[in-house]
Length: 145
Image (cartoon, rainbow, N blue to C red; front, side):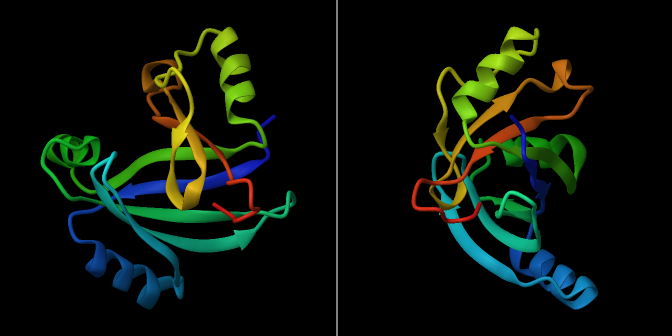
């Protein structure tokens, strides 16, 4: 059902400075950047390694582009740091249904568009040990999320 750690989302105030830190400190390079208007963020994906299912694991750096975005609210409450963890799956709707059937609240009624054309849904942090959890399905053309 879940095949890998897809990414760890990190909230930051300045995407360019945070990318520079990860590049200079760990040697990680940006493999994808985009602005997600729906979620109100500018983001960079830094590929960490390949995984057994042929996809990859990433760090997702998130800078809010508006004050009412979830990431902006997170930064106001908590400051910079880990925002969420995401698990990869080949069937995000199916995985959400199974996990929801186990008593975990699924925050999205249906999967929605995520980074790099993926489908995503979130699980309620109060049902996941205080951790906002995302489920991710790579897009159909095989692009890695």
